[in-house]
Length: 140
Image (tube, helix red, strand yellow):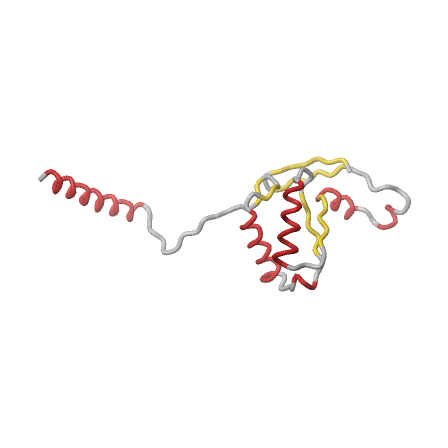
């Protein structure tokens, strides 16, 4: 019957396709998907970012977040919603006692000055911050 012929052809083509694919593309036992939680300096995937911060704090820093204050940086055009969400994650998920969120350019400029230079003068300058997917030129 027509159904059996069509079914046999699909089976034959399926076997041929799988044989060709196995020769051309070796099938790996495990597959991984590369993800970036931050695009152009702004966090887009907060769940992934939270898991990343968890790995950094517990696995790499081997720290108890309840015992430490945290300094986090943000890009110059970060939205207030992103800032709030970062604070919410840090306080609610990691139970930190305190958090300061600063613009990256301000910290970079402050790090370049010695305590003698800051004495009576104000901290001013131009910061060029170039990172993965974003570059900022910021007068401070």
